[in-house]
Length: 102
Image (cartoon, rainbow, N blue to C red):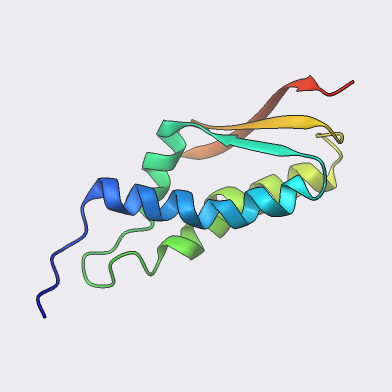
């Protein structure tokens, strides 16, 4: 069986699949997560290793996205009903919200 190296788009799709678990956990808290393309591309780049493929991706998502988001959630920055927009500023994830459900 021949395995071909993963392409950037495939790594990005794997990252999006792995983010579905985080989205579900947030949905249970009445929060919605939208991740912009720049952040998704950055996660795919940081989480890819030519030798290990996409294996480091989960750790990259935890370090680059989940941990900073958890800090903001613990600080109470996003009330229930919020849509959290995750973007990229420099090399770091930034989180904003524009709406709260009535």
